[in-house]
Image (tube, rainbow, N blue to C red):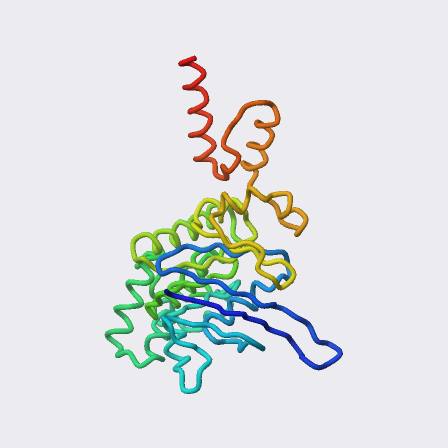
Amino acid sequence: MSLKAEHLTHIYQKGTAMESCALSDISFEIEDGSFVGLIGHTGSGKSTLIQHLNGLIRPTEGTIYYEGEDIFSEGYDLRSLRAKVGLVFQYPEYQLFEQDVLTDVKFGPKNMGASEEEAEKRAVEALKLVGVSEELFKRSPFEISGGQKRRVAIAGVLSMEPRVLILDEPTAGLDPRGRDEILDSIDRLHRERGITIILVSHSMEDVARYADKLMVLDKSRLKFFDEPKKVFSHYRELERMGLSAPQITYLAAGLRKEGIMVDEEISTVGEAKAEILRIINETDKA
């Protein structure tokens, strides 16, 4: 078991007039090698939750287990944990600071004690994994495009060789091409390296396309944790939370209303295409 939360509660400014509950009695288990989407309206607790997963925030109650160990127990090596459970904040390019791309990506491994040679090896591999070409390695990170900066920032976390990669809105502010390139790189890491991915997103289409499990937070509570198509079948309830389902889900509901009995759980363009072709074939046979 990669990550497990038990009865996680976090209250900001507890005992004051400004007391605010960000997480309330949340429990879940994330399997090794899974791709989990995390959605919820603004203020639902998403950012607070992911910062608990590598010990950046301590819970008011409850705990987090990584590989069966309580990460908040006395003497637990949180520094080592943060290399294994990497967290990429929203707009991570604002954290770039070194003179060139390669040096910036080497910083993490060197800070963890890796030799210069080992740090460079990891940095080069990480940059290639996210699609940064070698010609950019010696460029200033401030002179490259927004999408390239985002990939460099992600590579900086990957160079630590994490087993879990948490990304908070990694496509925020990018154009459609840049967004697709980032998500495809993340998906490739998941498939080829077996890295556990936790993706915070506001795009229902993106989590439907890439995630195999979907976690939904609403007003500090965990409302759903299931396959995306099963979660999106509750689209009316999601709407009451200020969320929605992918457009394909609404298309399927509309077709069923018109008597075309497509699978009510389809949520991606690929699934819709396959379902429509199935119906056409069945109609032709009849």
